[in-house]
Image (cartoon, rainbow, N blue to C red; front, side, top):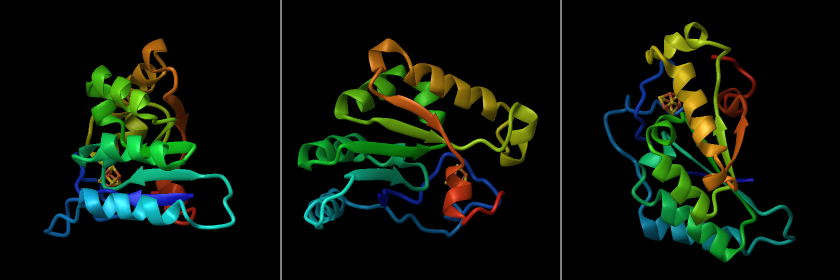
Amino acid sequence: MLTIDLTNRCNMMCDPCFMDANQVGFVHELTWEEIKTMLDNAITVKPKRQMSVQFSGGEPTLSPYFLDAVAYSRKVGFNSVQAASNGIEFAKSKELCRAAAEAGLRYVYLQFDGIGNAANSHRKVGNLFDVKLQASIICMKPASKSCRYHHRERHQQRAGGQNY
Ligand code: SF4
């Protein structure tokens, strides 16, 4: 799977964060030309296998090109277009979830540290578990039925199995 970190910005400030999002003193965010070039180059790699791309970050939905990147990925031939997200923007906006689904987003990966707000409270958002449930409910609505919900230890995966 191709992973593209669209931005190191995030609307959370976890400690630790595998990307040091919001903590390095500068913003690194891909331009539209950079995103397009990466997708154009990646789609030419042979042999072609499962053509999957996951947009990550930081929080990928904060990139001004998030929806364009999703739509362009589908246009050039990626079948499985995914976002690894903390869920906040999806929970806040049905319109975002619908627009993402219409652009071609197929999966949203939400990271959980456990069940309930207490198990997630070390990330400094008191109702983070509720927020992620809300995001998952919105993403599973019929209006956005193509935006399937998957929860997975994405951060754990990216950190090589280390739970944090
Ligand atoms: S939500 Fe993820 S990217 Fe954002 S600060 Fe937390 S660990 Fe980092």
